[in-house]
Length: 344
Image (cartoon, rainbow, N blue to C red):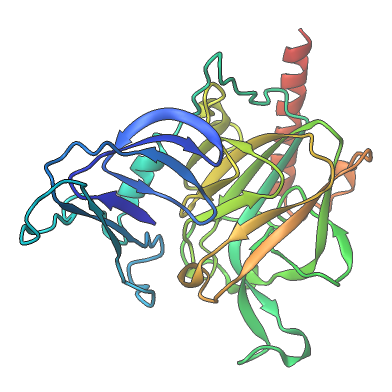
């Protein structure tokens, strides 16, 4: 959602309970589940100024079946002035619904404060890596629960739709099938998803990197906010297109990445996060959508991450493609190199 105030800049100083490097902006783009702390200085002429907010739609511009309403409020100075004076509206600073450039420009400015008084602790020696697709899929409808047909569209992670009450399974570290995630006219068969309760086991205090890859399955690509219960994480990298696990990590921000609990996977792009598994319990990693993004109201998908003393045996993963095998081998090599470097 875009938010702006007529004739006033805003200084962003915090996100999701953590300090950020102050940035002065004419608008913000806030995603579902995020919180932001802003400072506004009342330094304009006496009068009334509109605050306006409207949806950021990251879908294709042909998608128009969403609310085009603009929410408004009025900031009124506590001084005497004529009520006949026209109110100021932010015509020049409120981005359009589909302004992906404005959204990306704001997001790319976000940094942790990272000072001596407010330090950060970005994991460098990663011991567990996951590559997770965030996408729209077809899932079957049990007990004839669909209004039409035998399937419905639903958000999934690695083509798994979590549903309480189904068979417990290990959540895979990588998708079962590798393909051109952000390509056009992808095969519909790639959108078939499984239903189950999936759990990823992690050692206590393990350092984890997760790369979320957005896809264009069913031509339903869009920005996907990701939220993790019980944790803040560092958004160390993001980009457009398919994630390249050999070159993209070289551009990671490990100095002052934003520390957040919610961050968006860009449309037809990827997001890399890192965190330390130091809060024992079962945590959900949520795939959040609003009504127009998912095309179905209230859809949310999650994977449980359970902290345990059991090490997941990566050798037992079912590798269904050569590209998947190469991805695992390369990540394993990266892990060994980082472990060797840290030992030296």
